[in-house]
Image (cartoon, rainbow, N blue to C red; front, side, top):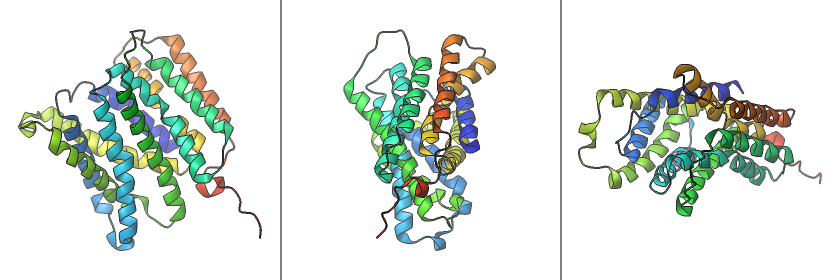
Length: 294
């Protein structure tokens, strides 16, 4: 779980570092650049001779879904939803993680569903705004499909690594991120205004470099690695830990105001969710139903 905690901490700080720094840039341009930089970060570790063409195609498809499609759908939802609603609706990812684990393993674990619900409530408490709720159902659909893409990618990666325990994980990520970058680059061609490259400031290039190398490249690598080392219930919960983490970092670093009772309740819900998942198997092969003896 240490990898997941490290990434949650990085993402919590990223909200503070990036805050408003990329406003005005085409979102698909931002996604394509950051994922291209992520791919280049792992290029030195790429060993094509150790992977079949079929393996590389599957890894590229995984990246296209988990990161490329996730980012593209998430960005598309901005045209239909206000910012507070987008933040609120990202909290449902834990449910999709548990769902896809159930589909792949054909095993339902009620404790995982309850833990996911607690993690969602723990996140919603901190993201809820008293402002009048404005709902556009097409935007809701886009954002939930984004959550589905990321959750599917997590469980897909767990199963893939369980089937290939000899793979060196860091050698896979050039292909994974290249598949993701290709999706975003294709969409960028249709949405990026003319002159975007010239409009990017030096500070924004540094922020894009941070996003590509650290917040996306290294962090998604560590998060997926962590996903293979914990059970699906813990994995579901950790998708939302960045929410209270971000509040705590903003409180300490930026000295922003915080509703302390809500933060306390949120943290207690996350701890209760983790407690429900203790003792459950971590490896995908251990989660599958045992085959009947012939």
